[in-house]
Image (cartoon, rainbow, N blue to C red):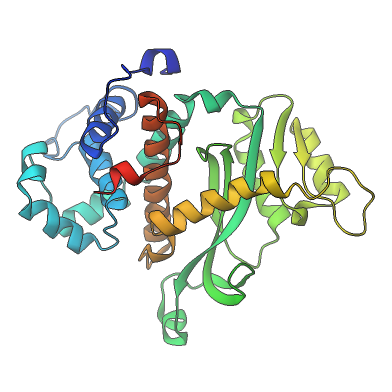
Length: 308
């Protein structure tokens, strides 16, 4: 696996979008994208180029694939950077089938950063709305996967899914999943930790909110060598206090996903479509954090340099 020492770049490398995409292309082409073997015509757009286009689309704020494809076809800069630019239907099909590639790239980017070795991880769940009308709910292909839930931060009900994210203190995604809002948070997080157990180191501290309380859940995390740290409930004796300052980290990560990366405007209408679009946004955030580490930017989750 590519180490941080091997990936450190000269401090004079600029933190602009073109430089990020160039570095990302090299990383994906060398360490992520599988070498194609066997018969058949090679695709004109490589996997490495597909990942770069997917990241650029999110960072530049193009929630619609059609608008994004029109933009890159009409801009000389993009025609010069890529030897082949796909049409909307081809881009959509390639992106939907690239779920494993996007997830693997996120993990590789995380392992290339010093925060990968942090002892503290933070976790939370945030709503991912998928429909706003009753007719959408009745006709959507997400029926059976999505459901009604309550968003406490906006004091409103929504129909969609819930994103469960475990990340480092700088916001780098480590593990994540989408789940039905009616499924208990402790049940989902337990399954997520169990599925990604090889990533957990002995003594890893996981900071969660007070909803992840309970003796059985604490025992489960201890079995996986995870030390659970959460705010005290009102009916408990003092242990950790409210942890308000530290808990604000995960809230700011969610705000980056929603505010700068358009998580709530993903536009997915099928389970695969929603998963891919959420993975796109997590990948864009991971790429920005990774490149900020590489170029020595102080604020690791700052994406302002890449949104124009």
